[in-house]
Amino acid sequence: MKDVQAARDLYVALTTGDQARLAHLLHPAFVARTTDGLPLDLGGVYSGPDEAWREFWGRIGQHYRVRAEPQDFHELAGGGLLVTGRYVGKARATGAPVDAGFAHVLRFTGGRISELVQYTDSARWAEALHGRPPADKAGRRELTVVRFDVDDGLARVRLDRPAARNALDLDMALDLQEVSLRCAETPGLRAVLLTGEGPAFTVGGDVKLFASTPHAELAGLVDTMITPYHEALDRLARLDVPIVCAVHGAAAGGGLGLMHCADLVLAAEDTKFALGFSALGLSGDGGSTWFLPRMIGSRRAAELFLEPRVLSAREAQEWGIVTRVVAAGAIEDEALAVARRLAAGPTRAFAELRRLLRESWHHTLPEQLAAEQRAQGRATATADSAEGIEAFKSRREPDFQGR
Image (cartoon, rainbow, N blue to C red; front, side, top):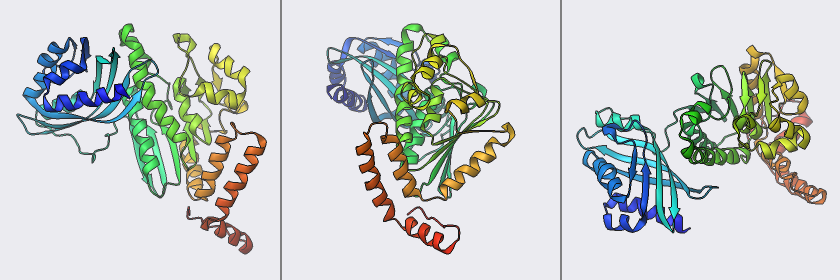
């Protein structure tokens, strides 16, 4: 909590220009690592509080009237905080607005901030400086590499980095975090469909990005990406609506986490599945160490992690990782049809069922029987239950309304 308060104080001090407060908050060995590509050559490394103020924050103040508005604070497993939010303001010369998401990694030494690593959309800063205002998304993070829309109760989420085969980078992690929030907050949501644009569903973490990052900074970068991504997975797994996932081409690494969150997974017959962490000297993320032993057993899960094993779509179906395999050319249409059927189903009963299945892994049999009884009581009281029973009596198809 002290670190969170120090972080909040940092943003207040920067907004008010309180250098005395900054001097108290920042460690003498403070280092700021800012986003490459920022205009005015602002991207780089600044050593010490004085240099960071004079050469970075001070120069921003000369050209912009902007403030950082933090929204979420996440404790990182390796220590420190991940702060996500938005830069809001305008360029002084053009008056064009700045509206750019950010992610800051803050490290602490002796209770003071000793490092800030900044990730932001440098193009938005440049657009404002040159008088080209960005689109306004009403305070939400603007999605850059994930597409999202809702139609008739069905949310469609499409990974959209086709040139990178939908590899997971920070933008993808933050977009998925935002999408998971939108799904949780969308009234009348009844189902979710997850798909990927281009030749693959996702190849997992962006290995090219990892290779181009100095090794001393890699752990911080990976930690920064994992935090919002895992938050997105946890929120999707706990949604009260069914999720359908359609995979094609490749599903690999941490990207399998999106499949694990789904209730039904359809795979195109040409899809290959692999984890691949051990080949990179990594241990794994995306929830696979939790989901896979429960889906396929500990021996097969260990094989996937420890060996360079690649599964075909048919093998993945036999192992229980996917629900069924369909022709490559039919995957999109089939998945959409399944998602629409679920969106037309008894939504509140599905929510109870989803929760029962998820929590069964932690319950004893008596606990699960009691949970089933409580859930059945809640489901029986819904309007959809009355409609389903009436439709059965009348020998017609039920018209569920999700209530």
